[in-house]
Length: 220
Image (cartoon, rainbow, N blue to C red):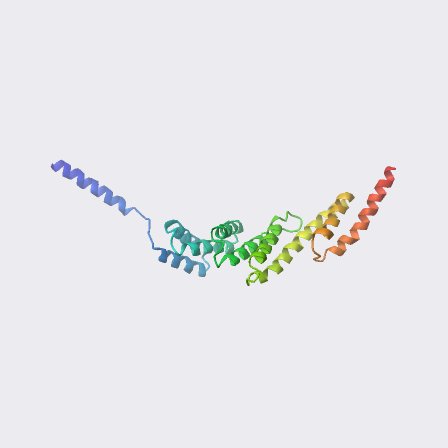
């Protein structure tokens, strides 16, 4: 019996000592949201994300969980980590399409694409996505204050996109690829609104046609 008691006491001591090494700090949802907001307001965005992520993981059905989702997206945005921000904003919109913050979320999604736009010599995926996103904002929430801000960013993205098309068209012209250049210059006129490029494209169109005619005459 004495030996059994010693074994039991030893086991209890072992389990008790294990508890000394546990570092998991269980905070309430209210504490986590307070920590997250304090860090966010002080621009400690990574710390903010950590608190809000714990809130989501530990209390997924808390009334603060939606706020945590939104602030994780915002914190990533202000860190300049736009891919992460885009994923978080898209997730929020998909999960809460009727939430009052949804117009803001779509607006921020569009800004994330704007901030990822490349120079005119690079692929314009982000410019296209920005135009698509801001147009969707205007269509879904035409009377919202965020929709009224969309046009300036649509214009900015369109200017980038058209300048990219003109850059490629000019390159084709310089390389003597006149049919390809002509196709690009015509598409600028037909497919894109005038953002200050149309007159330049119109100058090139007859030049391309003349060069094509010259090449055709040489073949005869």
